[in-house]
Image 1 (tube, helix red, strand yellow):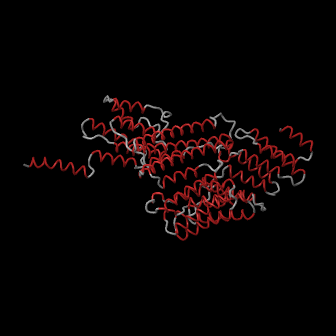
Image 2 (cartoon, one colour):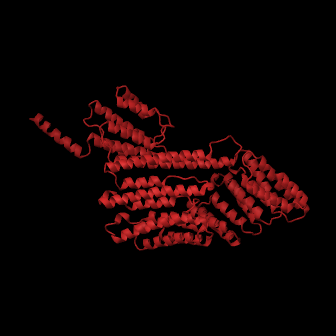
Image 3 (spheres, one colour):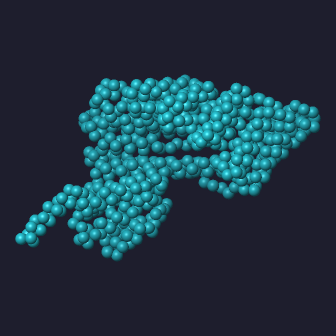
Amino acid sequence: TNDKSSLKIQPNSRQKSISRGRDPIISLNMNLDYLAKSNQKDAAFRAEELLLRIEALHEDGYYEKSPDVCSYNCVINAFCLDSSRYGHGGIGRRGGVVMSTVRGYKNNNSKDQEGTLEEYATTNEELIGGATSNAERLIQRMMQKGLTPNDITYNTLLRCISKDMDLVGRENLNNQSKRRDNRSNPKTESKPSASVSTRTAQTHQNLLVQKAESILSKMEDLQIANTISYNTMISILSKQQHPTSHNSNNNNKNQAEESVRQAEACFHRMLSLSTATSDERIQPDTCSFNSLIGAYAKIGASIPGAKERAIRAEDLLRQMENLYRENPEGNKSVKPDVVSYSSVVSAYAKASMWGEEGCALKALEILKMMEELYEGGEEGVKPNKRTYTAVINAFARTGQPENAEMILSNMKRRYELSRDVSLKPDTICFTSTIDAYAKKGGEEAAERAENLLHEMENLYNMGDKDVKPNTRTYSAVITAMGKSGLPRAAEKAEQILDEMEYISSCGSKDLAPNTILYNAVIDAYARSTTIGKCNRAELLLERMIEESNNGNMAIRPDTITFNSVINAAARSSFGDYDVRKEAYMIGLNAFKSLHRSDYCQPSSITYVLFLRVLENLMESEESRDYMAGKVF
């Protein structure tokens, strides 16, 4: 009787175990999901190892069930998240735990497993897609196992493509930075040209976009595309990068407009399908609008058409507002949030780079609207530090430092009242305001810049680590001093430089002066009325050369350094014959040294400035003509 009762209890216990999540596959999926979100390095490979081991145990008869679609989706998601955390999504990992596991399967003579091993044998260069390649590999395997990918599978694959677009974009920006360094060192060994690297990145991104389009079309054919699918596709299209060369602005504008046109076409494709089918699964939401607004806002400020892009971004914002107001209950999914408004503010801030004062005022107008909405109870549109900083930068670009400081003061007041850390001004906010005064120039601007610096230093000394001045802060203050025309402004600028040298020597390496700072001080001397200013400029140049020869490459002189010394000489036309002769020799030596340099070369400005040296410091017209003839 006991045996019979035990037989009856077992099936019930099995059902209870399954209902409590103790089914082996449910437990597996929970573990895979935990690994994917664990923030552990190589979590994706560990998740795949676990998946493959459970499959092997199922084939050996240990488990009744094999991993399901959810299992594979968890591993694909792990590769996607790995790409976000570590920027590789599994690129180039060879010989680790997964590799040894796959080798073990090959010994079991499984053809599928041999195929997986073959795919792992690819080189790093062949794994172009990173997370995308791993996701596609897993999808292929799950289909070989008789599993049908679902909407989550394909949406996660689209997310992998989006992450790889980010990765390609970052690598391209890093390459551009290296090329800028190479341009200051043209006599070193030849490197790949800028156009080649840019074309490679664009080709890679184009392939990823084509792949994403193909996946979305397949999802539409299977009728499993949803709002997430289209939102991710819009994001992918908006991440296409464009050349940053100012020599091809029209081409840049055309390419930028094309990427946004594609993103907007995808948005309208989604909208049309939603309207035609009344399918709520593909109804545009706040994320859809934000992705498209972001596409307009993300395009570089140096590419023409920034104002038109900002206006279009605002039009989309107004469309969101109207849809929500028409039916606040039914259209909650399209309610604008802080991202919607802040992206439009950012778009207008970028447009202000072209000297459009109206764009800066428009950014301020939207900021005030956000403040009013928030104070009226709309928690989701509370402006944050990023929003305020964008408006500060907008006024800095249009030469309105007073308005920039007004925004900074507003931030400080709101923070004091609320103690909300998202409104607390930081180093970037202060530095952007100081930079606004540096761009304007004049005595009052220099005084305000210096006062803001002292405020930052006092706050930092009192324990506020968020406002620690950095090299950009000091550079902006020095630039403001150089443009002030005040007596001994250049000497004060050099004093700041010396203080930074001392502080960095005591351990604060982040405040070590760089070439930009030295250039700012030399330029301050060039603009000053200090007697012997070109001697001071030359001494700073010599210090830079000596330090860089001793290994301190952070202050290696560049073309701007030499040009600033030549300019200091050209502006030393006051004084007697001996003073002018010494200034001429300093300018001539700087001109010759630049031509002999192994790491930088003259620019058109170099020749213009040296002509001024000849014009201002050589009394004999015949001598000037002779020297000009030798130079040109």
